[in-house]
Image 1 (cartoon, rainbow, N blue to C red):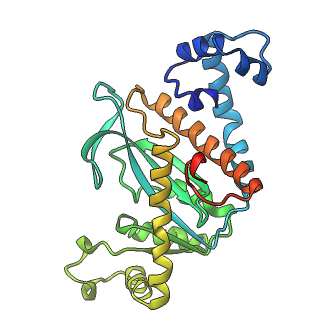
Image 2: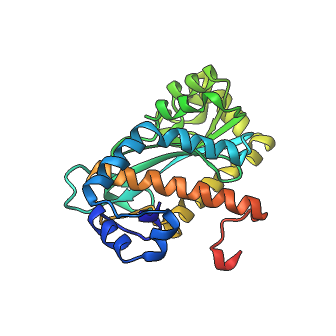
Length: 261
């Protein structure tokens, strides 16, 4: 957590930062500062064995509004010298090299589940992410046109989740020529007054991505390698949940910067 808050990029830098921060050492309760190799071993152990349990605990403590949730992804640029990163075309950045965060968030901007991949993984290839929602009582899941997939509709139907997406007209010349039953039902509900009103809530996840990148430095081009970037994303999302819980206890419900709340 200290590494994310202090915007530290590597474990050697973390070791140096802690050695020069007596207040942080006292707060954390360290009697001796571990070296970077010890940090590497411990962080790996936590991420593999404990992280997702802790993450889920914070989600449950926040009691998210699960009636309407959204699923989307955002591009995370990396160094052009990162050999593990891949290229893809982003709606915001155009062609770029990096990774991608696939995220499901609630109506009150709580990050329920996430997946981290290279940038070339298409949005609809998120079945494992959707399966993680099985334990949550979600009524409607909102998605962009990229999630207009028969496999995702079938999976959500299996999990008793109503998937509502924009229409991917690349699969048909017109709306009338849509042959898939799921797509036809989807467009009919999407064009109804109720469907239009519900679908407007998808903007919440777009705002959440903006907050994560601007306030929490989610995008970090200085990082090299899939595992390092994934670790940064994991701890950043956990930090966001912790701050969200603190704000909830204070009665603060917005995503503004601390000095503007």
